[in-house]
Length: 444
Ligand code: AMP
Ligand code: ZN
Figure (cartoon, rainbow, N blue to C red):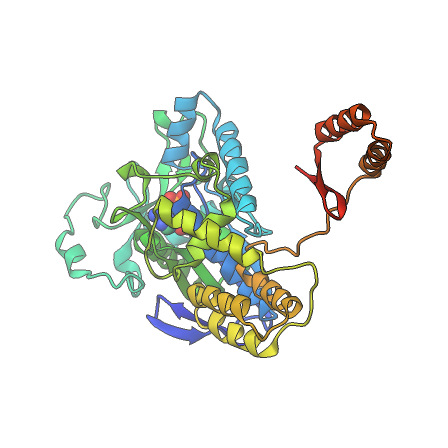
């Protein structure tokens, strides 16, 4: 199965052609672990998971890297606010983040590099950029000179005339261009003990260089796919490209994929707007995290998704109904539906149409229940909604023994004993229904 993806760089749908035969190497900009992720952020990672599952479904092996930003302005500030060391703070929020991923049935990427583990690599890149005159020092850090970069801003289709006009004639200690960005920030008091030695001065890395260093070190100089939300196009991805390509002289990534935002009342969900919702809130309101996954799949990853609680409720009901079509018996995958599913999902990960097709399968009166189940479970390898065949309830032997004793008591019209046995069975988490066919036991 070929996979076509919309490459932001070329603004067109392109067939994926991995650089290394059947292995796809991809990099996702991961979380800055200073607080709970909001469900907008989590949409980005659900999109990455759909991409990974689609590639695996298509038969590729996937080398997937998602970084953890564990040092930057926000993490340092928050660690001071919470009275924790930087590593205590970032470990705490990383654990919460990984739990969120698992609750959403996102396969956690095998490679989760931390920025703080890659400082030496960042320093080596900056040293070379300084040597080759792509970077310069000021009194507060080391900056990348965008005027030296070929094709700066192409990814985001930036209009650079504005940049040139804002060029400011300053002495050599100031930024040469308003859009030059920090590769390294020299130590200030606010950084506390979070400081690293480098030949060009003690300090800490800028955010953009972190991703370049981790991507190149884990995946090589040119990677197949790089992803992130649309807000990362500029400046983050733009700067990642500039510094990586200046360093290696090679294209940094073949394909760039960007997911659109989760919106609330017409505005982007974001911390600064104060309209965020976390997965914890969703669970506290008694929704399943998978209902949110279903909700997210209802919009194409390149379309905005408007979050409402009614929408989430609808998603939860739909998911439960879809799941009710998966019985105990698993038959054969229906080949014609499978083919249609492959066409849909390999066409830029079209999850809304894939869900619509799942419903067509569920409602198809010509298909046996067992074949429906097999076909839906096949789709679920990509959708990841955890559709599971209904298990026959296995009643523990002790409970069965109590039920048999109660049956005898009832035959002997020993109602007192029968009632006390029922109470005992209930206290163990099971209930007995007296039906016309006899007693039925089930878990509460
Ligand atoms: P951050 O931790 O802020 O770097 O964001 C993590 C990821 O979430 C990035 O890929 C962002 O582009 C993405 N993101 C941020 N806000 C939203 C949103 N409202 N909807 C979808 N993705 C978002
Ligand atoms: Zn990044």
